[in-house]
Amino acid sequence: MFGRVLCLFNRHRPRRDKVTWDGFNYHSECAHCGKRIYRRQGGGWRAVRVLLIEGEGTQGR
Image 1: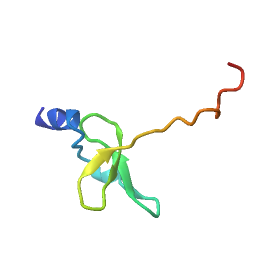
Image 2: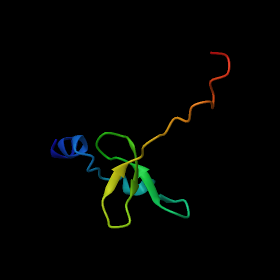
Image 3: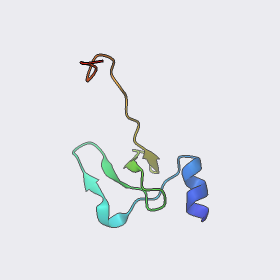
Image 4: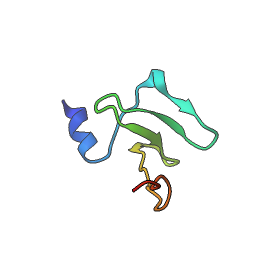
């Protein structure tokens, strides 16, 4: 329960069995809310932000 409250403030906890290294950051899923998260350099896990680039994938609109 307390973990879900932390998720509201972007303070996530990883599923330790799902942590992967991509060459730049560690990535995982949050153990409480299931969002995709990454480990910051200073520590702590934050949700991954997805940027939508205008023009990509907009054909046919």
